[in-house]
Length: 283
Image (tube, rainbow, N blue to C red; front, side):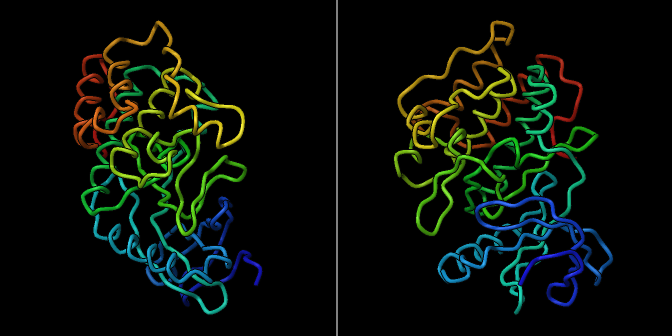
């Protein structure tokens, strides 16, 4: 069945507008007619329904995510299966701009703003890690920034940008190559420190106006994360901000921040040092 506006899932979620497509599903803005609110609905590709192991793993993660009450983590409302459309996830609809879109417009952010956003993102990651969920795809496109400067972490493994260079393993999503940690690039299991590394790459991109490793195939990019040091940050980046990025992007997981909470506190300290005026915590 073709997904189109007007379709109602589960007798309550009326699809209104297509938002994004990716290798694992489609994202739609929808209206929850039971409680009269706007929501985001992610519909799994029909091919994934044939893998009951994948669906059950994602269902378990959705249940864990639904227990999180953190302003920086997108809320999970429902996870169900429609007889006609298949498996879908219902999430909070966030009014904001993806950090990727901001960067495409302005290219670089100030060090103070970068550290303030990274502190919020790391706080959100810590809340996720506390329920034993690894995001596995931290990147600017999955960080939504509201007009008031508060940040929300979203997209837990279903939808991803069309045309993005990604690496996949049977039954799981490893991540986007440009932000992949060295250990995951080598086929090891993702850990909280893998998310810390990816967020470090995001911080690098905000400060430098470019990703540390880019160009070529996904495998070539991933290999560079394993073997090469990132190019130096621009000279106008304050040393404290650079030190935060260096630690987050350490090749060995043991050399990174021990957890996302420690990353958040260091980024917040540097943001204050640099005179950040925006939110340092999610509201």
